[in-house]
Structure formats: structure tokens, C-alpha cells
Image (cartoon, rainbow, N blue to C red; front, side, top):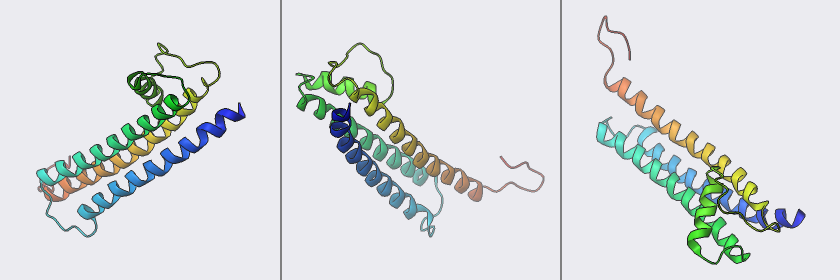
Length: 152
């Protein structure tokens, strides 16, 4: 069991560093829109902000899935990259279909990757939530309620 953690821990740390990098890029992009507000609120800018943030976190997740898949190939668990990517994506996203399983020797890496994945999806969700909240606030500032209207 210690062998599993000695092999999996460096990959988890690499994924954490990678996710932190992508979050920092997202926050930098988000900050360009927010502090100070350089641009007037517009639907196109808001769509652009959300699209960039979602694209960055998606790319970050896909890269992490690929890193885990590469580990599985290096360990000799998969001969085909497609099978390794599929298995990795199922674990990272915590779907856990169970249609492909690794050997008994390395099977605990699957749950380890799932723990890593759920943490990374939580961080990605937080970043996207911050961006969506910003867009909602911008829309409220750009279109304040008129006298007698209920705020939306």
C-alpha cells in the first residue's frame, strides 16, 4: 500500500501544482475585468470572461487526466493510450463505471486519482462560480432597477 502512495503522491502533487497554475491564470484573467474595472460591462465581454475561465479549467482537467493516463501506461497497466485515457477520465471525474479495472497490484491508484479529481473539480467550480457571480453583479450594475421595480 505504501508503494501506491509513493507512486501516486508525486502525480497528485503535480496535478495540484498544475491546477494551481490554471487557477492563477483564471484569476489573472478575471482580475483584468474586475479590478479596476477597465471595461464597461457588456454581454460580449461577460461571455468572453466566462468562456475563457471555462476553457482554462477544462484544459487543466484534461491535462491532469492525461498525466494519470501516462502513469498507468508507464506502469504497464495499459497498452493502448485510448484505454488509459478512458480509465483515467472515468476515475478523475469519479464516474467509476468499472468496465475496465487495473491489476490488483495498482488498483488503489484509481481511488487515489478519484480523490485528486474531485478536489480539482471543486476548485474549478469555485473559480467558475466567482466568474459567474462577477457577471451577475455587472449586469445588476449595468441595469439597475427603476423606481418601483423589484430587483432581479
